[in-house]
Image 1 (tube, one colour):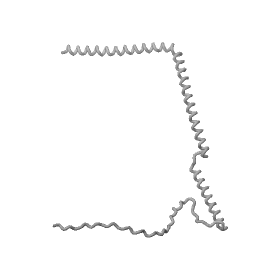
Image 2 (spheres, helix red, strand yellow):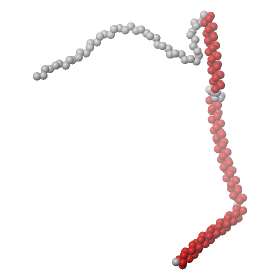
Image 3 (spheres, one colour):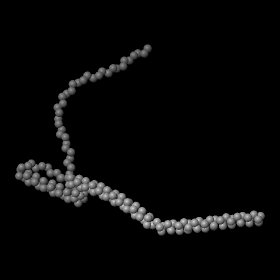
Image 4 (cartoon, helix red, strand yellow):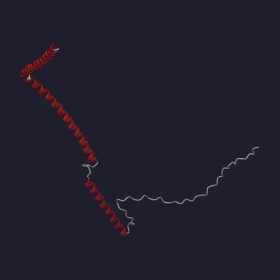
Length: 170
């Protein structure tokens, strides 16, 4: 039994040693490849650099063209919007202050119209009318009641109901 234990221990030790050696060999190979690449890089950098510069220049040209196309499209849309605003006299969007000022102007004009109407009615040129505030909605007009003379309708004969006859059962 002691022999079996020593055989297993020797076998495990041998496997562990082989794993260690495989790791050292992989490390050595990686160092060799890195040194080889470093030596090649010393010769190739100018060529690699030139290729990268050429690719960068091509990408810069594409990006510049795309930016110019986007800018042209945006300018075209802005020009169209400005033309529409000019057509509708909307140089800028309406703000709350603008709407308030517009309502005030409307109120002043309504007051001036009322004053003119009063002045004309006091001269007798115009009949005074019922004043209604400018902003209030008018009540819906009532329909005039018309009286229509109705002619008596001719009496239509009523349908005669049949009364079920009683039979004598016998």
